Image (tube, rainbow, N blue to C red; front, side):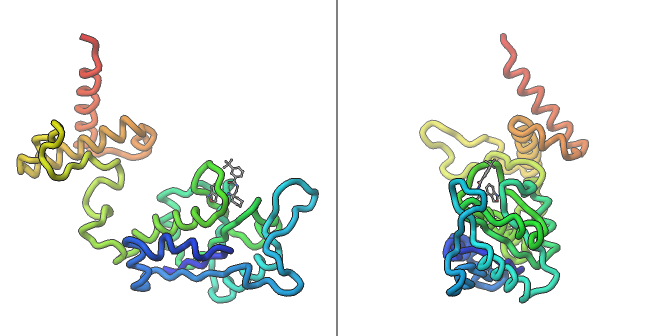
Length: 250
Ligand code: 4FN
């Protein structure tokens, strides 16, 4: 998979290219990232990468010409690309958008800085605007890295099948069940005895119940958007009954 990134800070992307499983996939060239730096498109006439907004006011914008030239260069290397501007007013990036990216292998991400980019670039050069959340960032780079990280782990071969959560488990639809590792007892805290029983069928049921229960407690909105199997529904009811009885006043 290719990611083309328009950014004045390509070095920032070492955070994903040099570490962990995504770093490994990058070294093996399963993920390819190309940078287009507006700074490389400055010349004697447009030597600055920031510029003042018309109408005045505080803050700067990215200079039109070097940014435009960087986008044109990225577009010229690849046809049928989708140009995505990372911006707070974009559509919220969700698991659904990851599927879209995995099917749409040619993506150009534009990372803004300062107060953002000229509206004419958004109107005429950008296909989509995406946001990772409602908070103020200093640039689009961390948003792009979020998206590349979340997407790359689903590219076949990036994560070993045994590590993959995509496989048979239910952790894609629900939160993970509680996990425990050695030691069995520490500072008076123990591991639930079912996990030590070796009874795989009961362990699976316990984990499924905990996963659904935890999702119901913390994010009921997620549960409303998925359909449950009969088994899952029964386990959720058991979890709820348990919960309500526990919180009943004696
Ligand atoms: N942010 C808000 C309102 C107004 C401005 C901002 C803001 C970086 C270039 C955009 C932010 C958040 C999620 C990109 C935020 C994202 C950005 C993102 C982003 C520099 C201009 C800016 C109401 C959301 C708090 C700065 C709200 N996902 N402006 O952050 O690029 O992708």
